[in-house]
Image (cartoon, rainbow, N blue to C red; front, side, top):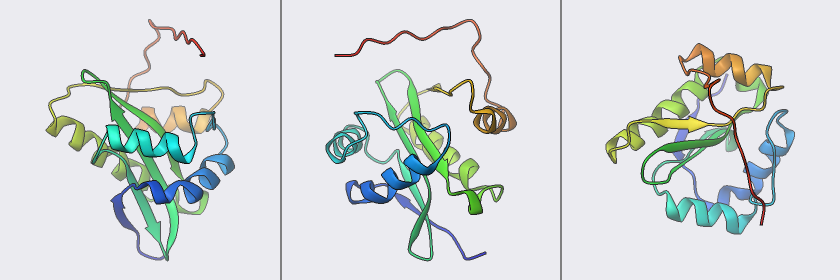
Length: 140
């Protein structure tokens, strides 16, 4: 397996990210997932989102941000041939380290109930399901 290099996510990554998100079962690509949306997110949350590359190809990514109180992870993905090598775990750790450096003590994420692979992954790295909560949304 070729070596993997990690770096901070930049707006120019959008096309490769969008392709990876769209091809990954369980990842919901929404109206917010646009070049402008990514740029806005990265400007608001500098130094928290990362890319894994191998052979010039994007093979993994994590979007991470915060609201000033809690961190939030969006779209953690690893290209299928690169799974089970620790890339996702490493990307999560990089983002969590950065959240901790800015003083946050907790991070959340949303997982589709039918995304069994994601549920198993997050459980394997000791994230706890919050069954006492439910989610509500408002669309403008």
